[in-house]
Length: 145
Length: 145
DNA sequence: TCCTTAGTTGACAAGCCGATCCATATAACC
DNA sequence: GGTTATATGGATCGGCTTGTCAACTAAGGA
Image (cartoon, each protein chain N blue to C red):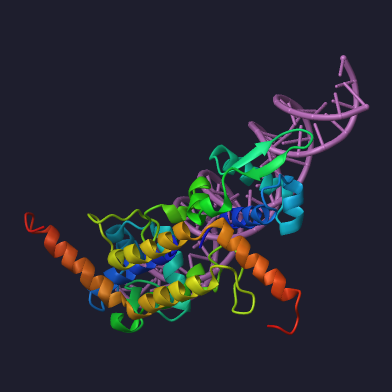
């Protein structure tokens, strides 16, 4: 499972993508997504340092995507926020696994990790935004579930 | 990834299985596996309450497997120690996911979780013990890598 | 009965993550 | 220049997991 911070980043950037390139305030994104504002500010800052978003201080400032939403993968976000999923951790406990020092689950877990990484790399912020937009659309049409 | 506690449980029970049904002391298991003794005592106690191991106090006491190692799956250990892997958590953040309130990654993650659960359910403590015994054997024969 | 052994139990400390608060820096506007 | 708006950065807090410690309880043997 991704850490909560990465989940917040996905929600926030998906919302930004839905806004279509406009600059939004951290507090507005937080209000719309239900993320604690002060915490989102830290996440946005970290993403800014990694070049995923562009931030602007002062009046009229805010946050924008540094590149198209279709160019930002979920893996990019996990990397930027140093999520444990990018580390070669062993399934059975907290140690780092390698081909040389394999644990009993090493082959299985290696394959699983490859699938998860592939999913995170091929899934873009734009995909999540499209999914959310679709949900909003359906929610506005009760009875069409 | 499983929590460190479950990893310790797997190592300890695998060692216990390799001892062939004998009763061993917590401190001896800890010394052999490198697990902090006081912490292992807690884990063993939790496993005892869930009926995975049998404990005996006093002189000549110790810990034994409550049933054959081939009847104890890694999933049993994760359940006994309430590892998060058994919870229906969402991939994207800390929320609980369901078919009704699906996140964008829900279908993907559901399939992944099913594979992981299947692996943990079909992999037994006896399998891990056999793997470790094999490693020990190879390590005693340098050059046969 | 008393001593030793060994698991049991509860209190507690360190470290990490999630989260909050406050002061500061910076940019725009008047 | 002063005021306002906004991100930046540091200190701190609470909860959870990991891990330690010490007192307690149960069992066996002398």
